[in-house]
Amino acid sequence: MTSGWDDQTPEAAYAAAFAPAVRAVKQGDAAELARLMRAYPGLAGARSVEGRTLLHHLCDYPGRCPRLRETGRLLLAAGADVNARAIDPERGETALQWASSNDDTETVELLLAAGASVDGLDDDRRPLAQAIWYGCSAVVRLLLARGASLDLELAAGAGRAEVLPSFFAADGTLLAGAGRHRPPVNGSLAGEPGQDERLEQALVYAVLGGSAAAAAYLLGRGADVNARPSGFDRLRATPLHWAAGGVALRATPPPDGAAAGARSAAELVALLLAHGADPTLTDSRFGATPLGWARYGEQQEVIALLLTQETT
Image 1: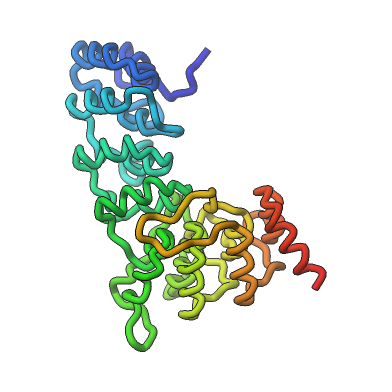
Image 2: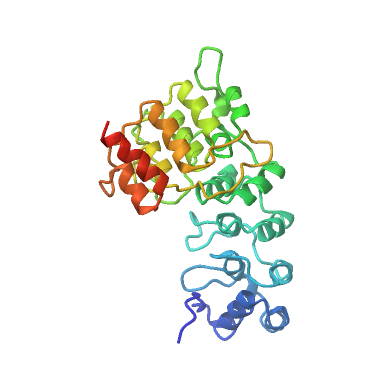
């Protein structure tokens, strides 16, 4: 029987130790992990067949391993690279990204203390982007408290509606500080050359973060409520799709200092409909309408609301 943990390594020097070390990390057996580290110097830098280090295993889904502070400190003291990318050494996700995606504040604290950048590698800002994408509000609050940088999209996703005006010039154009699109997941589609989707991308982020205030502000600035912007998991869905599916409205409060957000998916759906959202549009991957997304997400209030649109 296998563990399903990707606990084998192609590195012959660590073949006998890697699986027991992964098990020690997952089970919080700090004594066993320490013993293995002493017996196999360099084990903290070894990678699994798929490309995970032991530190990645500590942070991998669902996170929150037992005694993670103790085992994490052992790995870091033994030379684990806090900035190593998993799976793909060039484009893979870091341990901080994975911990952020799990709403694992304890591990995020550990990694930040060890030198992981709150804004991600090369200022990619993926830790905050992924925390918003996966509805990890506790990590969103933590990253903001630790000084995570905000641009137009991330401010919208974090519910910081009061910050949004700072990204616009007096004539309504976007300033340089509005930043670029930062896809929260790997493999996102690229936009058309020369096409500026930042307002619409930010509107999707506001929906993902459950912020009615941010969404309303962006709509007032001219964001196209029916756009299907690129950069969100190859779906090319409208903001109404994301709201209807309840993707990020996970009954969590807005971050500290954020403007009050939507309290339910239905409220955000109602806001978008009031601004002209078309409930008949389909996403490009599944050919589903927002009603189909609501049914898939079992969003009963939203289903009832969208069904009333069909009868009016």
